[in-house]
Length: 286
Image 1: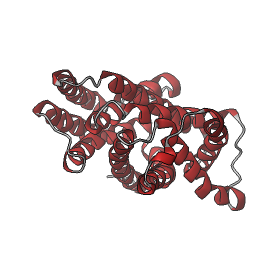
Image 2: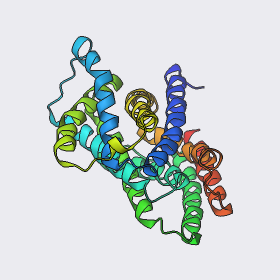
Image 3: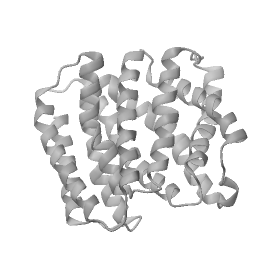
C-alpha cells in the first residue's frame, strides 16, 4: 500500500510530466522561429527572476552565492537551457521527447549509484531494457529520415545528461523545492542576463510579441517555477531513480502532441519507440 508521501509524489510527478510534454512542443516552436537559443534562455530566466524576486525579498531569502546553488544554476539552469534550446533548431519535438526524458531512467539511476550510492531497484532492472528497445527504434527512425537531425539529437542526449546531474545535485543539496526554484532562477539570471545584453547575438526584436509572450510565460513561469517546484517535490517523495523512470512517460504524450499540434510525421519506428519508452516508465514507477 502506498504511503501518503508516495501518493503526493506521484501527483507532483504527473504535473511535471504534463508540463515537460508541453515544454518539448513549445521549445520546438521556439527553435523553428526567429528567436535564437540565447533569446529563449534570456526570456526564461528574465521572466522567472521577475516573478520570483518578490518571493526572495519578502518570503524566502535563499542564499544565492554559494557552491551548491551555483552548481544548480549552472547545470539545470544555464547549461541545460542553452543546450536544449539549441537542440530544437535541428531535431523534431518527438526526438526531444524520447532523448531527453526517455534517457533519464538510465542517467539518473547511474548518477544516483555513483554519487549517492543508491542501489538500483528491481523494478528498474525490468524497466530499463524495455526503454532501451524504445531508444533503438528511435535510432531506426533517425537514420531512416532524409534530413540530418544528428547534431540536434546529440545535443538532446547532452541535455538529458545535464538534467540527470542536476537531479542528483539537487537531491544532495538539502534545499527544499521552493529554495531551489527561487535560488536557481535568480542566480542564473544574475549570471546570464548581463552577458546576454552586452555580448550575445539577439533576434528578439524581430519576432512578433505573441511569440515572445508564449516563450517567456511558458519557459519563465510554467517551466522555471511551477514545473521546477513540482519536480523537486516529486523527487523528495519518490527519490531520483523512481522519478527518473516516471519521466519516461513524456515521450508518448509529447510525441502525440508533436503530430497533432506541430504536424510532425510519426513513422512506425517512432511510434513503437514512444510506446516502448512509456511502457518502461510504467514498469519502473510501479
